[in-house]
Amino acid sequence: MSKAKQELIPLNGDESVAYAVRQCDVDVVVAYPITPQTIIVERFSEYVHNGEVDTEFVCAESEHSALTCCLTAALVGARTFTATCGPGLALMHEMLGVTAGYRAPVVMAVSNRALSAPINIHCDHSDTMAERDSGWIQIYVESAQEAYDSTIQAFKIAEDPDVLLPTIVAFDGFVISHMLEGVYVLTDEAVKSFIGERRFPLVMNHEGRAVQFKLDPENPITIGALDLYDYYFEHKRQQEEAAVKALEVIRRVHEEYAKLSGRRYGNGLVEPYRLEDADIAIVCLGSTVGAVRTVVNELRLKGIKAGLLKVRTFRPFPAQDVAEALKGVKAVAVMDRGCSFGGRGGPVFHEVRSAFYDLDERPRVVNYIYGLGGRDTPPLLIRKVYDDLNEIVKTGRVKELVQFLGLRE
Image (cartoon, rainbow, N blue to C red; front, side, top):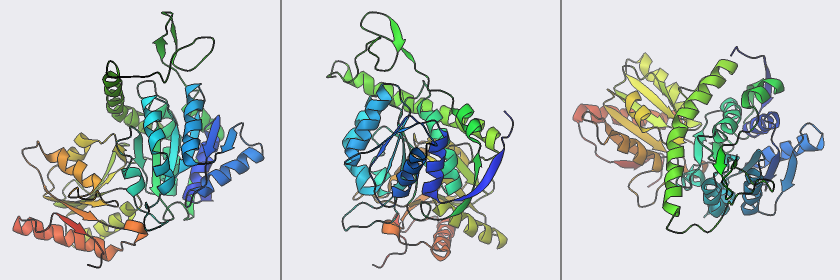
């Protein structure tokens, strides 16, 4: 696959997602407006109004209804998309599990927003992290460019017959959603060719015939039947197997897209930065990665062997990739923009620390909760984290396992 022709245009994060969805030959888009996601569906509704897409656009009465509509459309074979954030995602909670359980490959953009209360419209990751066990693939991006690229990849990942899991593309509210950036976009033809038409695995129906896995009156199958203890457990196991297979599918789709676009984000799962000889490293996701990368470069000029690991795919969690990328690092700080209340650390910290548990050689791992409700985390605070890591390496001791960065206490 040769690199495709591209155009550089100014887009904010919300607009970049809407532009990608426009190119993805989506059949149905259903959503309810909520800040800071609203621009996505506003812009897409303009595409519909202008006749630029052949898409059924529905403004539902709630986020719960929006995802329900997407689910039912997906089950009859449509390519579907929705977008939300914060309280809207929380309102979808029931249908998130239903959509994953029905193996409906809905793609959803989430412009990360804090959960109430108190009411806050700014960024943290509490909304998507609260849904980390709902069965959805979760991809976190650093920029508007990556939001565009990842949205296109998400449709191909979700619809892969070995996966068939709904997929979230998450990006920081306001920090990415509303910030203008030069975004390289592919041609409509290149995107449509890359994604292709939706494929359906074959299943056995009640007549003993192999039919496509979708609701079709001509080839009836049952979806959504009562599923008690005689089969429910097996179906949940199938979801777990699909999530495991998704790791390789995400890698493959990412590599195919890299050959088409010329852009890579690590291996699609994690993206190491200056870790080859690092003694200390930060693990984080989202827009904060850019600030940490800048601090790493500053520290390197001073002779400090600092590194960074960006986690791009949080679900399924790439534990082996994380452990391999941080092999040889002496102390690691995991930065969480969400708090698992009473859980002794944040969600990303729990996963990263667990990835090292069975290894003979493993680094000291500490946690920093930061940026809740949109609070800024300037380079000065990031340098403090690296200073703390250096102290851990020197003393061999961790004074505080979990700290709150930039907080008045």
